[in-house]
Length: 166
Image 1: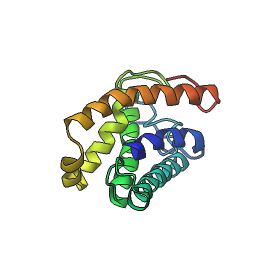
Image 2: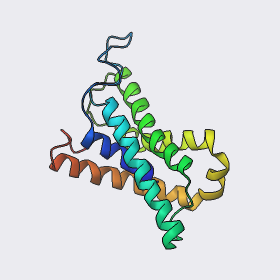
Image 3: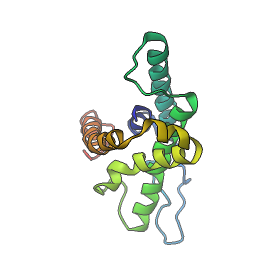
Image 4: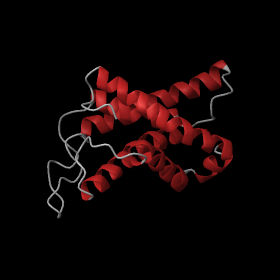
């Protein structure tokens, strides 16, 4: 999951510029996504996730780190892209529910990246999911995701990248 965990933090730290929704509102009068979802953040976030995934591949294949999952460039790309698409989908739904950008939405804020990553993996690499994601792995993803999410957000808040610690 590391290639899916990195993109959100990287997007927050490296993003900015033109919003993905181009500042437009949905038919309900609210922003489609908000200013926090930018093209630069999406591109650099996905790139950071892919870079971490490639590092995992190199460490496993060339340095014998067999505890790392057997990734391919396709699986790390799907994990990284899916994480940010899941985050954007959650932002879209959040706006429709009248929640503001940055407003805390427990569970959805923490698991959006997992849902997005798994949707893409299941659609395009189903055999990989079946082979490498058993119940124990899925359990650990469910346990570690909110802990890592909270830690990353607190760090982002403390260094001034995020406006709120969630």
